[in-house]
Length: 157
Image 1 (cartoon, rainbow, N blue to C red):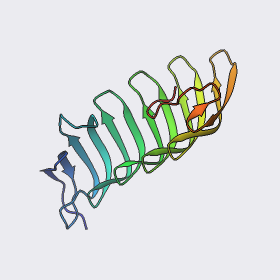
Image 2: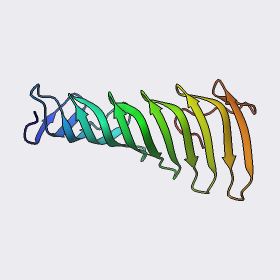
Image 3: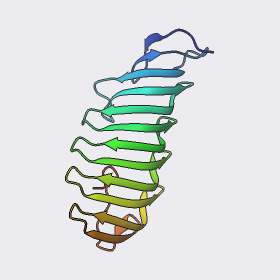
């Protein structure tokens, strides 16, 4: 059972929202991270389950990046969308904080990239569609394409 909204300090920042009988964040709340957060997180707004970010939520980062989607145990899980500070947008499937399944990324200039991931590593077919309609197909193995292009663990476009 949840209590009234409360505000209190955690090791990582200030939480505002309902708590569980065990005094843990539980339900829909907001966590404002400390200014020196080692991951550069600013704010999480979303679901908590017994103290962990689990369910639907949005995380903003000091870099200007933002993730909106599913969380489980504090990391992206399920379907989610990153909007990067440089204007790129990525919609991907996540499993325990790693890309796992189809990732679609679009640059501000209109280039679109589709890559399959397995446990955080690019594997299998990939396709780049350029604004002029031309298409480049690649095959990824061990996180690299046939062109020996390493796929970034943060932004793929």
